[in-house]
Image 1 (cartoon, rainbow, N blue to C red):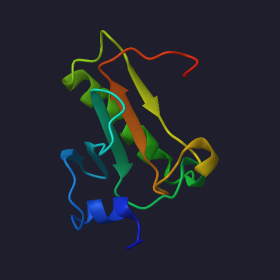
Image 2: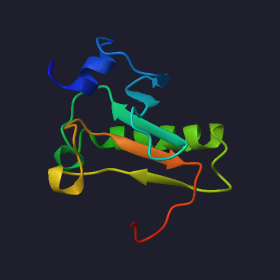
Image 3: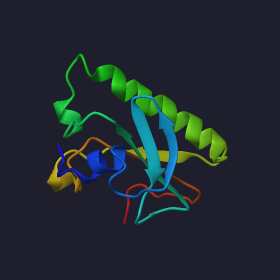
Length: 114
């Protein structure tokens, strides 16, 4: 998927502030952070959306969650808490169609948002 910006980040054709390259998954800083800690975690293989994950690909979601937990610990977010977000489809706010998980923390979050 040469047109996918996240695939281009994986291939190191687009610069990104990479914080962890962990085998099949990659984490980097969001260009438009919504919190003091805002990382994007992606599988290195192209999967368009969480709704496209097959049973064979399901372990990659576990790897993303494991990496999110490790990075949250490293960022000191365990006591204050953190948010994990996966948007699925443009109506839900997905703007890059490569599965990605947002790790947000370092500020209070409200529910419902807004």
